Length: 88
Image (cartoon, rainbow, N blue to C red; front, side, top):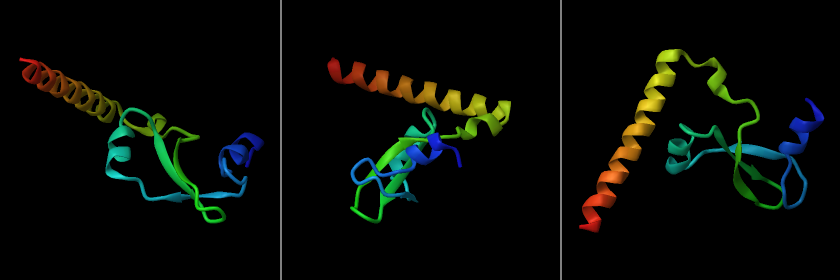
């Protein structure tokens, strides 16, 4: 493990090692845009989200990438429509 990887996998509160934890639904959705991972510290109880060290996107196919981008665009379009309909 490199020094950079080890530094990123320590607790920002106490410096102890952090462990992967289950992501919340909103974090799973946000992972379509930014590769997020949730970590927790067993020593002090800290829990938080960090950007993944190695983005898994380098292994996805072109078709999967197109689907992700389409979902992001669709989501943004829905938000715009909702904002416009509320502002009337």
